[in-house]
Image 1 (cartoon, one colour):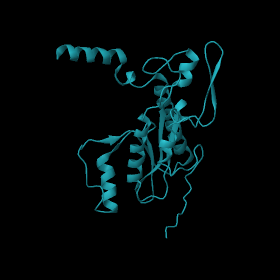
Image 2 (cartoon, rainbow, N blue to C red):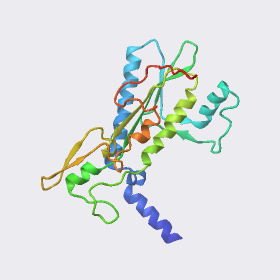
Image 3 (cartoon, rainbow, N blue to C red):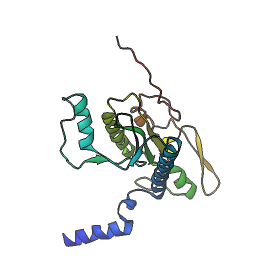
Image 4 (cartoon, helix red, strand yellow):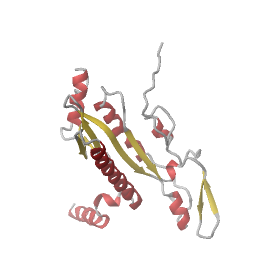
Length: 224
């Protein structure tokens, strides 16, 4: 057991903990959206000096449940981990309204998945036998649904949903994209490649509305 523990500790130090799991590009992407959120926060304070804004890095599950329970006592009654929380990459920006209630005005996240373009440009082969140019996309991006749903929960009594998710990587291409091998030859990546693309797994969270545009305007759906 001691040898196992020592090995894991050494691996963690070598990979600098979570940085071993998340690639360099993913780390930069997360940092960028955090910086952008800070700029938005500062801009809001300057543009609307009569309002009070606050920036939060996380949101506790207990708080989400309290909101649900306030709206309907049947909701927000189950929790197993008392210290559970969500931590959106870009944080949460809120404004205090005239009733002294904090209202969410922006939640930002950034996800990077798919290194196929980088691998092809470096001549790196992937897969179990290191003989493939394209890596079958994983399901890690589906974890985004959790944060989206939790923000929906705490905003259950709101008529807006200011959630912005930035996607980067070959698993989210929206048009044919060319990658160049070291020998100068080219590989075209297509967005309709089911092995590669994972956008459809995310549009289930936005009712399959168009991506890359503002969909914050309320729409009414009639159900007979």
